[in-house]
Amino acid sequence: MCLKKRLTLVEIAQLEVPNFKELSKQLTRSFVVNGKAQSTLNNYLRCLAHLGLHYKISPEQLSEEQLQDYLYHCKNLHNTPSESFFKHTVYGLRSVYKVLGLKDKRISLPQIKAQNSLPVVLSKQEVKQLLKAPKHLGAKIGMLSILHTWGQNRFLHPHLHCIVPGGGITQKGNWKQVKNKDKFLFPVKAMRKVFRAKYVSELRQQLPGIPQSLYDQLFSENWVVYAKPPFSKAANVVEYLGRYTHKIAISNHRIKQRNKTTKEVTFSYKDDKQGAKNKQLTLSKAEFIRRFSLHILPKGFTGIRHYGILSSGWKKEKIPQFQIQLGGENY
Image 1 (cartoon, rainbow, N blue to C red):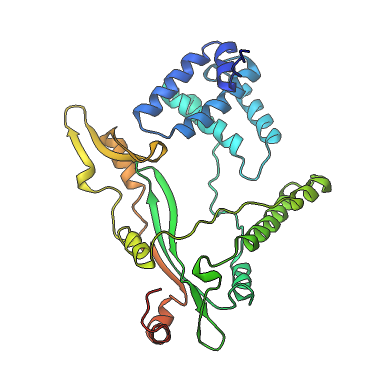
Image 2 (tube, rainbow, N blue to C red):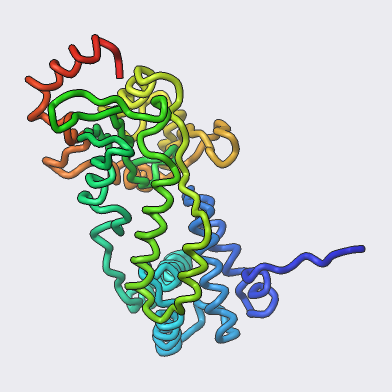
């Protein structure tokens, strides 16, 4: 029995919308040459395919009135807190206009307001309550966080690496070691219940029209919280993160070639999607400098921060006392 392959939305648009296949090729070529993420290209093409199939016209040929009508329709149809479908449609159109040199059309697109804050899953107060619960830890903890802004291909990828001690300080001022044989700080079962409750609470606020039957179904399921054990010993974790504290976005040994004729720079990187395979990427000098500049922190911005019992107010007097209590052990 031979099963027919189900076509993707992009493949359908390439068959049914005139010129869309050629547009897809040009956009793909631009992304590959400039080393942009494949996932971003896929999102843009999928949203552009929606647009093309809606009018049966390739997106670059649409009038401003048609675009405004579609974007209005798009925003109402896919009204989610992140507005990801609307944003990918706008950004996809901007990429198309840039590739085709249609500057006038690019200017006419709406400006998307940047989101200045991340959605809160657990508030600071809720984390404190979870920590103070005697059945979990019942103590005050601390944290060391290191801001890391890049991935291997130098794209902006801001994320935090954090070190959290395996214990905390009780109200009497004594060190209390974490339970669960030092394997984890919070039980996974407790975390998934809290996350489920917070997620559903946010869902109720953002989409009030959802029927109660769906919420009953959500609470009947065991949710999954991804939490893996720390690798190796504490000293290895500290040593690993220590390499990132004062690094720049790219070191000299990774720059393999600078071509003065073509004004291009070639550097090495590891492709995580292919098992950390070593590859090389060539960018124009302007694009290389642009990506490097993304990782220059604003003046006065602190990339390494200490919280709780690891904050500066605790370091001089209290931390040495805890080290004595621990008998000089490394935690």
